Every structure is written in C-alpha cells, then in structure tokens.
Image 1: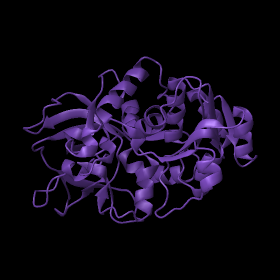
Image 2 (image 1 turned 45 degrees about the vertical axis):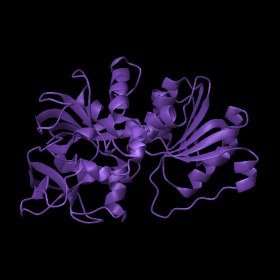
Image 3 (image 1 turned 180 degrees about the horizontal axis):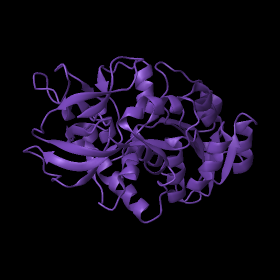
Image 4 (image 1 turned 90 degrees about the vertical axis):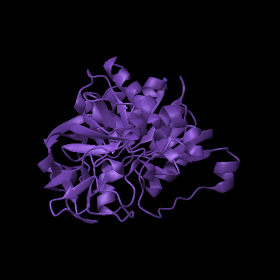
Length: 365
C-alpha cells in the first residue's frame, strides 16, 4: 500500500510502498478514505520530541473497517470509524476515573516487543506509527481503543477532523473549561484547533467569543464558526482590547499556538477567578512567566494545561458527528482543500507559511 513516510527528524514526507500486517487480538484494519493534516505532525517532524523514526505520521484518519482481530468486540467489517491519537489501556487509575487522555500505559494499544511489526518498508524494516495510527496511508492497523464509530451519513473528509482538531478545540471549551451559557471566552490562534474551539464556545452558549490572530483573513473566516469579535494582535494591545470588550476580562482564554508571549497574554486577559487554558503544542522546554501573587493568588486565576480537550473519544467523537449532521457544528468550512497522498510535503510547506485557513485533507491515495 502507499504511505507518506518521514525517515528522520527534519526529513520530508515522501510517498513509498509499505507493508501492513493483518489484525491480531484487539486490532482493527481500516481502509482510509480521508486523513487530515494537523500542525502537530509538522512539529514532530521538525523538532526532536523523542519520537522514533522512520515513521508514518498522521493522526486524523477516517475510513471503513476492512478486517478485525479475533478479540475485537466493538467493531465489525463495514463500520465507518474515526481514529484518535488518545491511546489508553482502560485499566489504570486514570482510565478508570475517566481520564483516558492521561493513561499511564498508552503502549497498551501497541504490539509488544518481539511481536511482528504492524508496518514495514519495502526492505522489510520496521516503520513506526504516529500515535499508534499512521494515518498518512491507504490503510491503518490500530487498537480498537483508538477508534470511534460514526454514522454512515457522515462525510469522510469532515469525519476525519473529529479525531484531533475537534476533540482538542471544542473539548477544551466544553469538557475542560466547562463553558456555560453567558460566558465570555477568547481564543488565541484561529487555525484548525482554534476554529473548533470557537465552534465549541458557540455550542456551549458563550455570548462573547473573541478570536485573536495576526491574519485578517483568518479572523474574518472565524466569524463563520461563531466569533462575535475579532482582534488582530499585530495592530493593537490585545489584552487591553479583550478587557474592553468583556468589561474587565473574559471568563476563559484559550492559547492554541504554543508560544510564550501568547500564553502569558492568556493569563493577563482573564477576569478575577478566570481560567487560562494552554492547548498549543510548544517547543520542548518552553517557559512562561506569571505574577504568582498579583495574578494567581490575589486574583484567583487558574492556569491549566489541556490534553486532548479532556476528551472521551468513544463518547465525544460520535457526539460531534451528531452535532454536525444536525447542522449545529460547522465542519464544512473547516476543509480548506483536499489533496492526494503525494502532495503531503507540499501541503505542509503551505501550512508552515501560515496562509492556510482551515484544514487540508488527504482524500485520494
């Protein structure tokens, strides 16, 4: 089958013929119909996070179940499914308390040492799977814990977005911050995750939804997802403007970029007792500064890191699919363009330029 392979940190996405094994145990073989390009895979490719290469990255796949292992209980051939990078065992303390995104044993979803590889290159050498998925490929072989079933009416190019961008962005608003009707929120960075956060805020009933970015086109685009106010942070004091709009500060601010400066701004723009939520994937060892007494103690502000929108993939992905099919979540405008698998490197170069509005999706293999 075809797959887009990265051979080393800083390498390129290059289409190759690779081998994929048959499912065993709890594994599911999925014929991929669409796979979204997330900025996180670009970070992993370009920075040394300790991820092993060579690898097939891609963690927003959607497709049709082609075969299942003998122990699979949740899926059958023909099901439409979405893959998610949350890897969980289902038995540790975190999983049993509902925090599967903090699972102590994510390796549970992978094959054990000594077992045959799921993926091999044409030289018969191991290929690693990004987050147990490897979605930039014609097929994926993954554990049933990393899949959620969606209705067959759901278009694949929209369904694939649910497994990362939507659960992360909308999940941070709905699950982590528990945004409620009448709240005010600010979202810093309106790429794919930020737009989903805006959608989540609208669904939750927030009355002030402030989109912040440095690109006027992206800011105008964010209104389609529910932004009530937009701020170009290149042109004005963003903290002062947010406080003016929200009469003193927002209930919650969500940083989706992963930068020191914008993370600190998120803390500064929330009201007393408010929460600043860090979603963006920062470079390793990035530090931020806060005023421990003036901001955190005297003002009772909260600074919270968000992992995968505090999501339960089995519950949340079908819920967002239902919201889309009911016309209550905008995923149609989120698809910027569709490409074939040979265009992944070119598409990521375009993404790195900062000019893409929405998500690029592989729909042809």
